[in-house]
Length: 82
Image (tube, rainbow, N blue to C red; front, side, top):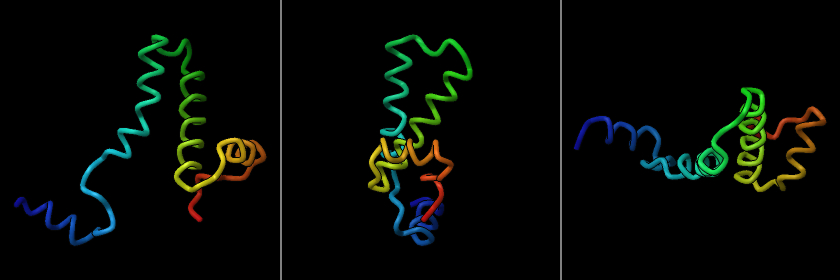
């Protein structure tokens, strides 16, 4: 077994050794890009990425997507730990 695998497992036993959750998080964006052909502007792409980030983080923390977006627009952060 390579040394980096045993080092990672011993230093962070709570983390998995796969990236499935990251891949699942990116899938809707890839599908949107494939279906629509992409974004017309950088600002549109940035807005979409920001909204997806807020919704994805809220879902992982058990927060309703609508409430997370509303809190973010009111200046509160659902992305901050805690």
